[in-house]
Image (tube, rainbow over all chains, first blue to last red):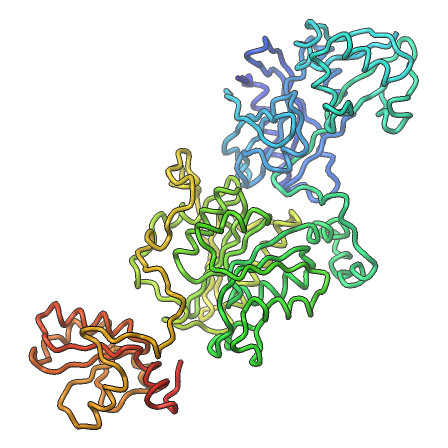
Length: 138
Length: 484
């Protein structure tokens, strides 16, 4: 289960709405006890995809490294990655899957016509062939 | 000794340590020592073949070791090694596989694509890597086949079992006059190959059915529905939902058309819009109702456009929107479509988990392989055209009723026939004598069979349907009678 605290959630939604009609992406920092993940900070990262970003995003590994460093400095952990799907459901697409990592939770925010619509959290497998839905509370 | 920073989710394998200091002179040595010390960690970082997993980037301090000396990159005391996943995604399609390349001939051929920034070499490679299945090589399939081949789709499959008929030529522009009588598959493939020899064309000489659909569809990334009947439409939809393949849909009638993308992951499907088929006979096909020959060009090319957009991952795909086109008003309208959580095939709790009998579902009989008119049997309550002609020549006293539409009557008609279109027929039942000898005809015998039943239910005794209608008359009695 992944729980996103109010402040972090609001910053993630704001980020996704501001990026509309493009996709946004960021890191989720917080703590975990192995069972429940608790997100305290939604950290805005740059969508580094070269080309039209309406339906694509890419995270620079350097930025992820910086996010991990920032988490350690705050005494937190890097819990997961979030990104938005403008005018599209919050499913885990084939592209998402093929560029995923089984270590983290992947939260997808569906932004329809510029407004937040719904969100899902996904746990991809090792082979990048499937992702399980994770209970998401925000 | 270098220090390895352990990402949070992997700390369960390193006794909760967030960093581990391990010996080793190179990055490779360090990682091997690390996973030697914590064997459960190995699976997370390395494949079974011992390669670093594709999603893992190894950083030495601030540098990706891929750009240094890879595994052999030397490490020193005080260095920090980080494991950083490469993460990307998006709702659009992925990059083309690396093995796709374009020859110089292809680069020249596609130059007007390549100079559009949104397409470019990358986009053209995606088109080449794409596999698109066309269901039907008729009205919609014609422009689809021509333009998708020209655009450079790598592999195009076509499913069709029909032969080119003279009445197809008014709209199915992929077939020529000289192709009449030829298999549509062969005629279409020939034209497509002539336009673009780089395209691989796979021909499926069969009717798409519950038995073969999954097997045929599984090799393609996109399915384009160019069919004109409800059983196949539901079949294509359900197969696409089950296989998670987008269904680029189009339909046409007289002056109006529709298009949308169904069964795209996260979007609605055909059943979300129409959970049940209309009663049989309510919605006429092109053969029954007619179609403006240009119309399938417009709709087929909307389907082709959406297919190419999906492949390229550009623009706003026609997902969750039904495009309605009215050629007479020259207007496009759009209806919003919502995914139905109760949908029996794509909803939250689907009840249809495999393909069903679609002819039964739509209440229409299995089509027999188009029995030629000559062999059609004359049953009780029916009359053959030759017998009808003899009856006329003998001067028998009987009532001949034509239940076609007035504009059809103008094309051709039988001597002495009284025109009462099927729609108005029930209001005229009282005008006839219940004991009279009544013969009813239409174009092919379908509508007149319905009219016969109306009379029989009203208590008429001597009612007969003309088998094969005008078409049979033209074949067997008067070849100068035009067929339409």
